[in-house]
Amino acid sequence: MNEHAPRSGFPLHYAWIAAAVTFVTLLVAAGARAAPGVILLPFGNEFQWSRAKVSSIVSINIFLYGLIGPIAAALYQNFGLRRTMVAAMALLSIGYGLSMLATSYWQFVVLWGLVVGMGSGLAATVLGAAVANRWFTERRGLVMGVLTASTATGQLVFLPALAAAVTERGWRAAPLIVAVVTAMIAPVIWWWMRDDPKAVGLRPYGEAGAPDPIDVTTDASRGNPATRALAVLAEAVRERDFWLLAASFFVCGASTNGLIGTHLISAAFDCGIPEVRAAGLLALMGLFDLVGTTASGWLSDRYNCRYLLFGYYGLRGLSLMFLPQALLGPTAGLGVFAVFYGLDWIATVPPTVRLTAEVFGREKATIVFGWVAASHQVGAAFATFGAGAIRTQFGTYAPAFIGAGALCVITAIGVLPIGRHRTAPIAV
Image (cartoon, rainbow, N blue to C red; front, side, top):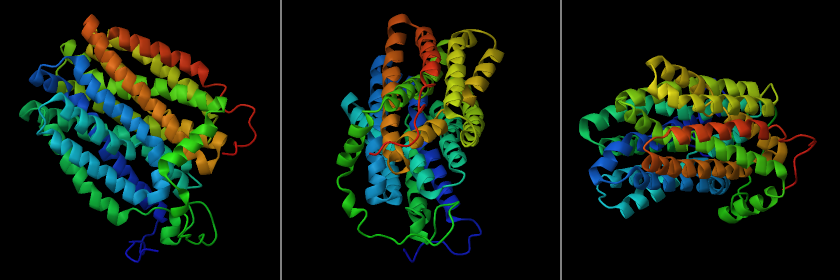
C-alpha cells in the first residue's frame, strides 16, 4: 500500500473518492472533446478550408479516440488507473497547447487528430466502466450513470465559456483554456486517485470482509496491452451479441458526438442563430443529459436494459428527424429538441455497459466494452466527415439529421435480442 495515500479520516468508502476524481477527469476530457465544435467555423474561415476538410481533422481525432478505448482498458490493468489518467491529461494539454502554433493541415492532423485523439481515448467512457467495475459491487449502475453524465456536465461547464472566448479572442483561445485546465487536473489525479480498493486496504463498495492481498506479480503477468485487447476481441467477435452491441453503439456515436456534438453549432449558424446562443443550446442539452444519464444508471440497476435501449434510441431518432424543422421554426422548437434529445444523449451507456457485463462476464467486461465503444467512435468519425461532406455538397445538414434519425429508429428494434436466452457469460 502506498503510504502517501490520503485514506484516513474519510467517513465515506474510498470508492466514492475514486469515483469523484474520475468524474472530474471525464468532465475535463469531455470539455476538451467539445472544443472542436466551437472552433469549427472560425478555424475554417482563417485557413479558408471547407467544412469537409476541417471535419476530416476532427474525424481522425474521433476515430483514434475510439480505437484507443480497448487498448486503454488493458492499460488500466497493466499500468493502473492513476498513471493512465495522468498520461491522458498530459496528451490533451500538449496537443491543444502546441496547436496554437500550428499553421498547416498536417500539423493539425498530428496534434488534434493523433495526440488529442489518444489523450481523449485514455479518458473516455471506458474509464468510467473500469472504475465502476473495479470499485463498486453495489450501486454500479448508478455510478456508471453519473460518470457517463460527466460528458454532459463537461459541455455545460466548458461550451459557453469556450464559445465566448472564441468570439472575443479568436479560435486559439479555446485550445489555450483546454491546455491549462488539463495540465492543472493532472496533479489532482496523481494525489487522490488509486488503482483499486486493495491499494487502500478495502474491498469494493458493497462487499464485506477483509480485502484481498495485493499481488505484485499481477500487472507484470498481463502481457502486452494491445495483444491482450486483441485476444479478447478474437473471442468476443464469435458472439452475435457483440455485433449487436457494436452496431448499436456505432449508430449511437454517429447520432451524438459525430453529428450533433460537432455540427450543431455550424448548422444553427447556417440558420441565423449566433454561435454563443448555439453553444448555450448544447450546454442546455448537456444539463438535461446529466439528469437523463444519471437516471438511466439508476434504471439499469432495476429494469431490463434491452427495453431501456429501445426507448432511448427510438426517442433520439424522432428528435433528430424533428431537428431540421426546429432550426427553421420558432425558438420554442429548439427548446423542445434540447429537452428530448438531451435526456437520452448518452443515456444508452449504462444499460450497454450492464448488458456487456452480463454477456461477457465482469473480468473481461471492460475490454469488451472498450471494443464496443470503439465502434461508437467509428460511427462518430463517419458522421463527422459525412455530415461535413453533405453540407458542402447540398448546402444543408437536413439530410444528415434525418438519415441519422432513421438509423436510430432501426437500432431501437435491433437491440431487443441482445442477451436473450443466455444463462451465463461466455468464457473468454
